[in-house]
Amino acid sequence: MNKPSPAIVTQDAVRRLPRWALLLLCVAYIVPGYVGRAPWKNADIASFGYMLSLLDAGHWREWLQPSMMGMAPDTGALLPYWLGAWAMQWLGPLGMAPELAVRVPYVLMLAGTLAATWYAVFHLARHPSAQPVAFAFGGEPAPLDYARALADGSLLALIATLGLAQFSHETTPALAQLFFGTLVFYGLAALPTRTMGATAGLLAGTVGLTLSGAPFTVLIYLGLSLTALALPGPTHASGGARARALLTLLALLLLCLGLGWALELFRWQLAPWRTQWTEWRSLFQLGLWFTWPAWPLVLWTLWRWRRQLASLRQQRHLGLPLVIASVPVLTTVATLAGDRALLLALPALAALAALALPTFQRSVASLIDWFTVLFFTGWAIVIWVVWVAMETGVPAKPAANVARLAPGFEPVFQWPAFVAAMAGTLAWIALARWRTGRHRTALWKSLVLPAAGATLCWLLLMTLWLPALDYGRSFAPQMREVRALVGDAPCVEVHGLGAPQVAAVRFHGGWQPTPARGPVQCPWLLVDVDAQASLPATVTMSHWRLEGRVRRPTDDNESLMVFRRVVTP
Image (cartoon, rainbow, N blue to C red; front, top):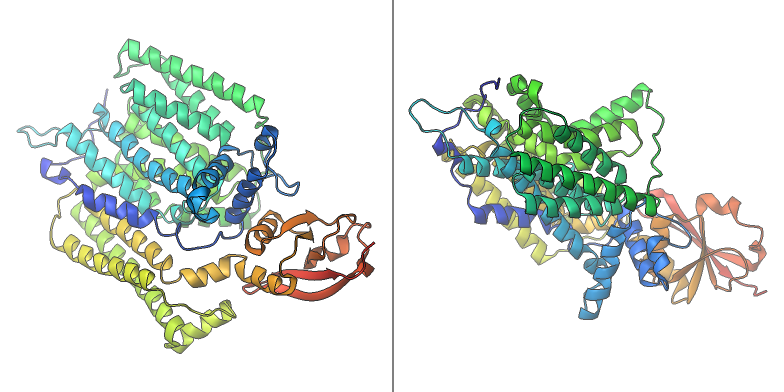
């Protein structure tokens, strides 16, 4: 027996969110962070380095085993590096810089993640179990209008999530996994009612997720879905549609098994369980800030829909997001994957957060609005004040803090960034006035301000603070100092450098890095300060003279010792 729905919504509450406003919000969130900056340490520039190395690959086997100076990536991902290399091959001849060309497919994947989340929730919200209470004399919303309103709310909840901002703007396998994982979410949400679109989403999502270094996540998703379809029980789909869905999932499961075995991606080992209290506390804190503000809404959803949790197979709008979100959450808890593994849970958590909207009382919605206005307005003021201090030296204390954290940084006024930041701030003020003055009954109203506030702060950081962040988070300042010593050398030998540093030597320095093994006749040698004692015996240090020690301006622990060859064997 189906329990009565806790959602009580009128037709007036599902009024349409203007498409132009929603699209403008998505553009304002996607574009900043991809334009005007260098690759950042560590994962961002390391991935960029592997993409550059594929351009030099002379055989197709090297594309199946990306490496950089003999170092393999941390994950078994392939497709994310292929996409970046292909983008440089296709867009480079058109005059686009390599660091910008590799971001084009990632911009499209972030946009696709937002779109796939919207459509997944749209299909889930049309399920009969997700519909609100029908009134005795009419007035309840039309199913399509209600589904559209919840889908808008889920998209706003995803944009508002704090953990999405940085990782979704990096050219790393994490974003590719997020995109293809969301395609799987969409495919399962639309299956079996929309067979063609769902099958295409599942095919692209499962293959892409497997090639992006997460084959076991695919297998778990498909295995749970097969189990849910195979077990007897009532279903709202016809028998033929259910059989087609079962066969589709089975075929995809076999495909991913074979693909993962062929590419030797099944090297996933369960890390030791984290039993120490400090590690559990760190993990708990990560979950609190990374999924904010989705997790309080998810808890509210689980509480208000608690009577429906006993029959999740009939409550697809609850069961599917819970399954999709639980896999990355458990992976984060059980392994050392950390925040990048938790990233895959955000679309499903946003879907659950949207289900809280039709159960809110007016007092709860008002509390969210006031907290959001105060929180993001306060952070916007802080960002503006610090920027003014960087540009003018007033107030003195923020300017001194910036000088201490980024020694040697010289601020540069950029008119396009200033205009974009000013436009975003004025739009935030107008939105806050609009939200508190009208449209109090719209279902998506409680998530407009969180999404707009998160977008505003991200926009301000990626415009006003971008020069300082670029100075502190990239290897460009350090490589400029190294280049002042080395100049235009045909190659440099390196020792003790990690993948991010090797990529920085090639990209920022413009030199071809070569491992320090002795016989190579490069005129310069770069050694990490912590690896000097581990130089191979074939490297005769009497043949080299120390020319200087160059540190990253914002990190004393990342210093390079620059040696010049003085004796040629």
